[in-house]
Amino acid sequence: MPVISGFLVISNYNKCNTAALICRYADLNLITMTLKSFLFLSLVWFALPSCKNEQNVLSTGETSKQEQPHDYYKFEGVPIDKMDSLLMQYRLYALETDLSTLTPNEQKMIPILIEAASIVDELFWIQSYGDKNALLKNLNDKEKAFALVNYGPWERLNGNAPLLTDAQKPLGANFYPADMTDKEFEMWPDTNKSSQYTMVRRGKDGKLMAIPYHEFFAEPLKRASFLLEQAAALADDDGLQKYLLLRSKALIIDDFRPSDMAWLDMKSNKIDLVIGPIENYEDQRYGFKTSYEAYVLIKDLEWSRKLEKFKAFLPDLQRGLPVGPAYKTEAPGTDTELNAYDVIQYKGDCNAGSKTIAINLPNDEVVQLEKGTRRLQLKNVMEQKFKEILVPIATELLDTNLMKHVNFGAFFENTMFHEVAHGLGIKNTVNGKGLVRTALKEHYAAIEEGKADILGLYMIDYLASRNEIQGSMEDYITTFFASIFRSVRFGVGSAHGKANMIRFNYLMDQGAIYRNSDGRYGIHFEKFRKSMSSMSALIRTIQGDGNYDKAAALIRDKAVISSQLAADLDKLTKKNIAVDLVFKQ
Ligand SMILES: [Zn+2]
Image (spheres, rainbow, N blue to C red):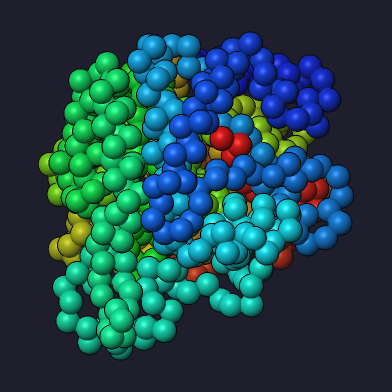
């Protein structure tokens, strides 16, 4: 078993879970009232009075009472209606970590950062939907729970299908006026219209206007900015202090670059905060507009140090890749810092629908070129997904004798090395077609994700053979395989879903995995390892050649869910195995 540190509170929860079945049904508040988590809870409760201030600062008329996910998410009986089944796709999890390692000042910072995060949660509601309270006030409790996890009346796990409304979700969410046509947008000469930091609205004269976020959301952003300044005053770590001050300013001027730079300079901070308008997924119309979100994080310094060490192996790994020499001439990217964290708050975009377990920031290419990026592995949430989703899936679909190989250490490291493996391989084609990204166009993401998955496993094999990591290859491979089922459940619409389906079908074709007559899947470990090599070579060659047609064909032929697999996945739904988590925070 690999050594995973920093699970004080979580491991208590584990004990509780294994000690008595009662705990699975008991109120999570009781579960979490273990001695070590008491500190955290008292901090959060202590913070509540100050959270009320938000009600005074939102100029939009939205109240900001922080709604908690409803207890329906703990319901484990038989669903009686569609809403039950939808809510049961999510499992309730109380976000927590051990805060006793923080200094008194750092402990004081936490409630302040949580309040700032809660403010941007309300801003995301406006960007995604509009008037949250108008929607919630006409809903019953279950519908309200649904609306809160989806940040609107549409079902995120089902391609935003309308559920509490007859209306389709606008592709551009609430970033643009509902009646704006593409033609009107194209003809509009305003250069700020495609800015990632403007809301598009109609003026009194009916003409389009691009309003900067810091004006549109002026009052709440001023409050969030003030809170970051307060937190900065408490910061013991100089890097964190500088970052918080710059971020505080950034929020009210929509210029995030200096704070992004300062964020990458931070090394020794124990607390971290990601806050601002960051990803552009919510704007599915043009992909211009960024959504507000926030994570409050506690860094796992020990794991972060280990990851730093593994990066030193990248050049050697690049040389050893099972592919022709022309395809591995580039120096591997070592500009990515990799850190592990426990998350104590998810707010806004990242809290909507399915929850991410790893992030890579900043998105600003100028900052990326100058300083690189940082990947954040969100460890406590990862462990919860492992327990609530991956283990039940494996229990249902894997050969029972494989279960001994499914463990969190392997899951965590597979995910970690996936991220490191993005740095391996090639960014430029070997035949003058330019960047791989440009050559493979819309297929780039799925191929690149597939590459990272398979090369991540290759890295693990390499490190395990040198005793740099402790787990057995059988554990890594089995857990990796079980994880394919988990990812495929998100649908083949996403790059990750496609990559996983391609791999599943490839491994089936090679006989590396097989389906028994009892409907359970087995692994032929030797063939699995061979397939890892051949598949890695296949993907790397497509990338190096910039072979768009071959990428397209691979996705067309292999990124498909067979009726057999669909039936197997259906079993998971019938057993009410969760698809994702919802947080009590
Ligand atoms: Zn990836």
